[in-house]
Image (tube, rainbow, N blue to C red; front, side, top):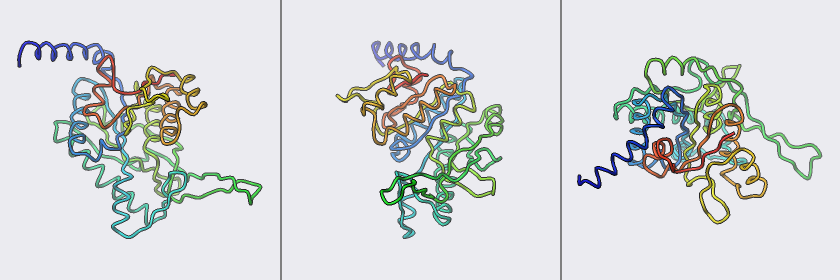
Length: 295
């Protein structure tokens, strides 16, 4: 390492220091999905980033998705998949696959990667300890034939009705890193597949998290010219929704972020999971790598 390289390294470390001091002891909820979950180099960089957060005194809580992995296994099994408004219709057979993939294959791979890099991860689903309570999610669709809106049943697709954070508090206190699959349990004991963004947002609120980080396959919120926007408050974000700047697949993530910051989470971040160590760059550098939203 020459002198210039050494100075650059030192500058990076010093830049991170005030952020490490500010966030030490605070909870950071990270929703993990997209390319960051499927590309080998990104998987390892994510695991190392999470271990580093824990090592410097933060309490990371990971919530993960797994839609592509579920889709691949259903295809291999010859099970057709139907989507309504972007949500997978989930009958009992499909729910069995969801639980196997999310609670088993994907969850344990993330746990294993974090442990490989020196962390102490524990894998959970929302069913463990009755952590995530859920009910069936029903959507309404207006039709010309019917005067009243049609109520569509998505089967075992659920929405969060309550969260008991005691298991997570216990793991944090024991220096473990919780890795949570977004599967909830109903009052009748039935299992429900819940959108991982929604689970991460609700968890962040209940845990009193300092930050909610949503990893995506885009740089963040972009203006109409494709420039990255950051440092947005809730009012500005809503205006971007109203004028159509924020649309399509970004809308659910933005709504999740807004719900979180309007319910007590200090800031929400929509960041590019395709960038190695994006979590560290967003948390510990002045410029960050995504969109910051505050209440």
